[in-house]
Image 1 (tube, rainbow over the protein chains, first blue to last red):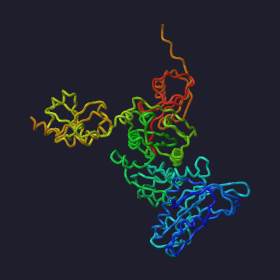
Image 2 (image 1 turned 135 degrees about the horizontal axis):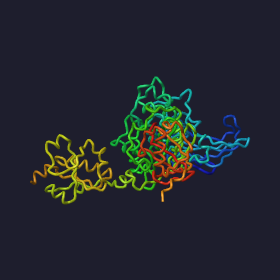
Image 3 (image 1 turned 90 degrees about the vertical axis):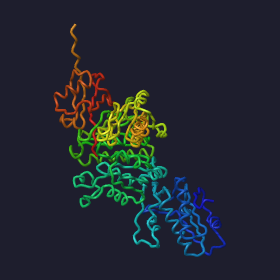
Image 4 (image 1 turned 180 degrees about the vertical axis):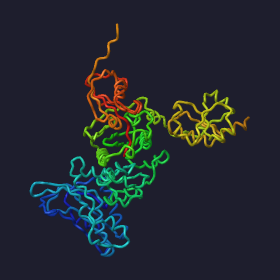
Length: 512
Length: 87
């Protein structure tokens, strides 16, 4: 029998006690939690317990196992009621058998504290006046998460309260199951500035289980009119660490990771891995389009927000082939500095506050499966006139980002990627266009004996747009090493006809 | 037979971001002979110091992103909007 389970019928404590009896044990301790007749000054008539069973049973079993290992007890079990309970009913029972009384008492105490703190169980109290309310059971717990990390036992004088999600659990659309979904979710927030601050505040407050924060900047005094989570005396410190510390202080249950770096083509995939949803709270087009391409390549949704002075735009990119992406809306190359950012154009503090709050709202709705912003639309909100519009955006058949993503296939084996030719004339006959990936100095010192495009390694990714997605290219360097890497990189960007000359120029000279 | 001038239409125009700043207003309703958003934007560029070329903007007609060459009719609501990146 599982050491932790739920019961829909009244508990037979005598039978439960028999199950944990063991002849080798000299001590037995048990705890019973009862339904009492009042809570916070309200007279209670009966109550209901609800649990997200799948998650709760796993966590409960883990707690009992932890207690057995930690205190060396022989047998331990915990049973929790669900459903409707009357006053005086046993709501939860813990029993422990151990060689001596000390381990039995300690393990019993540990199990009930941890269960109250960690297992997602909710109770609805029915009051004498006819009202009812959902209450998070964790509110009565000691800060168990902290005490069990210490080597010695100690009892805090003023226990810190545990997070209490009762005000959102009370929503029909959230409930215990919705709360468990939020707890199981992992969100990456790119940018911990004007948008990122409200996003992180509300997601941490709501109990989203894991938050990643990416921001390379350090706090500056000019940030503070809109990033009001931070303090003037923290200027000069990394925003990612400041934000992570704030998240932890607000809700210690959230697992938070800070990355003090700028998202780029090399680290984007690694940073986004393991997260269910990416929030673009950045302040530049380069990051936004990088995240857009990543969404299309990996199928991971990205929720974009951007503000300008007194207005902003919100768009959800699902990353599939059927719905619009950022490039479907903005097909032309968009450069930073052309249309102004917060530093150049100015912004009123609450404007990113409103859009960050909308991003947090849409995120919670997405995680809870509630209706919201559609993937084929952009919300624009003018905070001068207070007018909102939802503009319909369609998946553009000629969208370059979608075309690239669709062509991205797993990297081929080296024998398909690298081709051997006796001479460049043979390769020309086979329909290849040559791309020289050597730097300018090498190219001048040892020119190719044929017409070629020049795309040095350092500019490969930025200048690849000049190539044709369908084109058959033979990439060439001195020995074939760099060109093989370059061909792989181009294929990962959708240029499926990219090949490398095996052995490079050296091999041609050898065969000549 | 001489070509007839296109009929005048009443169009509601909304400006966003840099365009709102340069127009000095959020929206207006105007009477125009412009047959499509491209002509309408060219006409507005003569009136306001718009610096952005149409390639850098999107136009939406009646709450849907559209084409610069799609015909306009009286009563249409036209939005001119550039990309923004602030955060």
